[in-house]
Amino acid sequence: MSHVVFTIFGASGDLAKRKLYPSLFRLYQSGVLTEHFAVIGTARRPWTKAYFEGVVLDAIADLTTSKSEAQTFASHFYYQSHDVQDAAHYITLKTLQDELCAKYQTEHNKVFFLAMAPEFFGTIANHLKSENIVDGQGFERLIIEKPFGTDLATAKQLNHALAETFEESQIFRIDHYLGKEMIQNIFAVRFANVLFEHVWNREFIDNIQITFAESIGVEDRGGYYDQSGALKDMVQNHILQVLSILAMDKPASFSSADVLPEKIKVLENLRLPDETAVTSHFIRGQYQAGHINEYDYPAYIDEPSVKPNSKTDTFASGVFFVDTDRFQDVPFFFRTGKRLTEKGTRINIVFKADVNIFNQAIAQNILTIYIQPTEGFSLQVNGKEVGKNFAIEPVKLDFRHNADALGNSPEAYEKLMYDVLNGDATNFSHWHEVKASWTLIDKIVETWQADKVPLYYYPAGSMGPKESFDLLAQYKTSWIWQPDVWYRERGLLK
Ligand code: BG6
Image 1: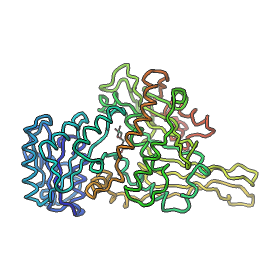
Image 2 (image 1 turned 180 degrees about the vertical axis):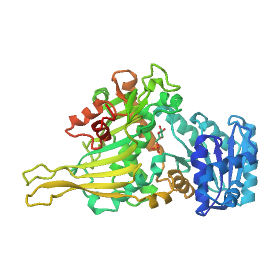
Image 3 (image 1 turned 90 degrees about the vertical axis):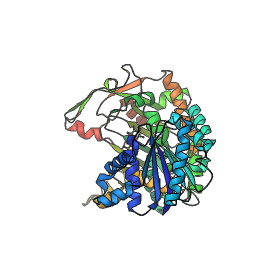
Image 4 (image 1 turned 180 degrees about the horizontal axis):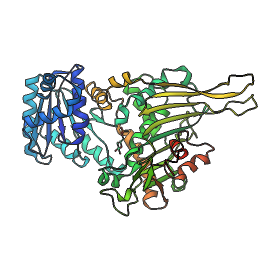
């Protein structure tokens, strides 16, 4: 049960409506938030409290049939029109915060959520301190959304600005993938199964494949995306976070104090590619017009708010190496992109072949972790085909979460909010992780920006440029998941 005042900067935005208000409501329904909480929403628009309550009610409409429950919840929401650069507004904010603290007996606990453009993070943090809104009483926690900088230099500046007001242990950098059920499940699969942990190393693992495929294009986010690209949008944060969980050593306990240092160790030991390695090991792609399953899709450069001569990567693929005893020289292949064949986030762990006594080909064992849209895991093992001949065939042990379990499963944001209220930083990005990730990504970007590597084009609906497949062939392997094949075989994709 938490006693707390939340202050949300960017309360009129999409993120707040789609993710935050529903998550807070679910925490209210489950009793984590009781009558001892209040939310201050701030944004530039001049909304009234009644209007703000209406926005909140809309956002949670699907989550309850009880009007009175929804209304009681929404009554805890207060609105203040706010210009983040105007010091006078923080004085009003402080007064409101104090009033609500007294009214709801929130014991001076405060959570600040910055759901807005990062260029204002520093200014807001400064004012929170100078206007004594962060006053050292109760717990005081800051939640921020990505992007955390656009390269190492800007990330450092941002961190420096926040550090004037908040200590690292008070800063919760959201990576919403870390709130996903199956990403958290990687910890369970790895560390609660004697079967896996002892073979989870370079002696037994041949390669690891991480695919974050999206079928959507850039939609209405062309303005942001064109400045960012797939590498910065998905790899610097989500993919490297997942890689760190896959590659880390077993922590002494499942607590942020033990987990974070192990993850940091992985990221700090990522091999930094020089220009030659970037050229041969990292692929940037951009989608062209394409046709799949009877639908026509436009090229990236024809999307709204995208520069017509844009060279932004809508696809990124490559191979990372982690220079630790556990994984030295084991390739971690990754690929992510927009307008790929299907939405699918999954990880394939491909084990090495054992000495073969059977005089016939034997498939490698593969553990697949399905993150989304289906959730679960499968293990490909070899067995004997029924019959008098001794023929070996691969069989799949398959586990998927059933629909009931999924229906009750909390949204990523709800889990993350819950962790913040408990002060648990395990599922958030630590500054040292962010710093190590940018150090690596900067290396790739330097070479890409200097145009020393071609931009490869791929038709919308495919699984990216051919070069991403060729990369794995260089390592005598191939992508395990190839959903495009199914469509090609049926003539639905060229
Ligand atoms: C975001 C990216 O971080 O993750 C988006 O900015 C991407 O471009 C999204 O679409 C994917 O998240 P999810 O949860 O839909 O897989």
